[in-house]
Image (tube, rainbow, N blue to C red; front, side, top):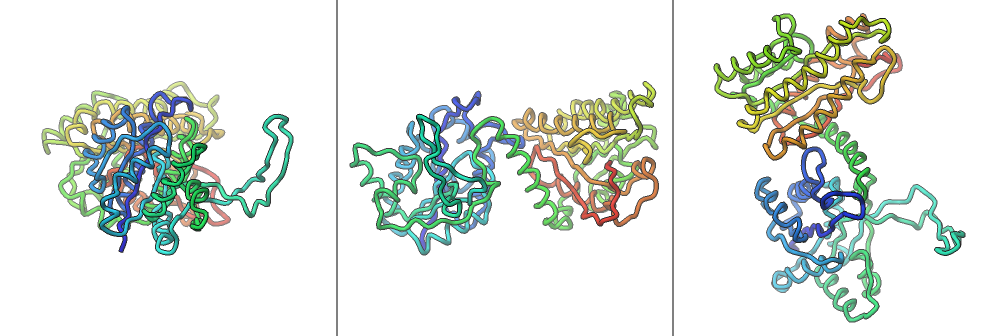
Length: 471
């Protein structure tokens, strides 16, 4: 059985693409992009070792990251060269002795492709049992043209069925990639952009097999790509959330100290009840208990009381919100202030006043959005605006607080059967609405996880008679 080594190529600088620091260290969901890459190869059972090839600017940060996140499969962090092929050669040469001792396969992957799936990694490993070189690619959805570089006139339009868009990882049996580079380096005109290209040109006798990639296996090239990657991560997080076993997760709540603001009604009340059932020490407050989230002194008293009783705080959940569904012009100044103060100012105050305690416990701050945050709707002006602000607050704090190891996430439930929604919409068919208990279980499960900076969409499949409202 061959040994499989993942080579993470992280020598790029990224300055030409508008980044202020190397792209692999840019923050995505509160963590460096390369951290997501390492997590995925660490998790795959077919990967035995990981080697990171980087540059002098990044090496200290990457070594600290490997230690902090306990990426145990990383065996080497090496300095690469200016060109991509030079970094590949560094890894090839680092494994010469191990390759001499037994079968060895290398998988080369871009440090700025953070969403590579377990399936793609597994497909490359499987293909290496039949082929000496393996590429990853997706079919082109667009027509590809060949154009004259001087006149910009089309020269040819190839059959789209023959065109693929290359991705990584690219996998190789060790002797294949080593031999290909040995031949390439004897060519004074050697130029390349990827490792499969080296095999294709200098070892034409070796077939390069192509496994299917994925549109989500996106490479971070420009700063705007971070927004696309973030949306893919949100979708992926939601799917993993729905596939997880909350019952097993929630058993880990025992002994945790939870503060739940907005915890006397709707989803917050369900979280408080379930958290207590699983052994958490829950401090739940809401308007019905006289708590005012817009008053920073009230928040401080709640925090002080919880610490006095239980000695620490492990998680703070802000589920408090108000929905005033009417045209802005019809709202009184008092109603506008109540909406803004509760939904935005309250969230900001909760975050600021919780920071020191969550830093001490390496805890979790959870905020709540709504499906209406994605775009403003008539009659939802202050609510939609405030929920968009909460999403941006989540992502900002996940980034700001990552060094303190505080997890910050946001739950975005669609159409839940809560008193707030009933007040705004009246009675609706129950089968069109999420059960607050279901949302509460998912939300509590998130508190057990280590991810940060995610917007977790919790949705229900709606029938043809579903309400068009959102809250």
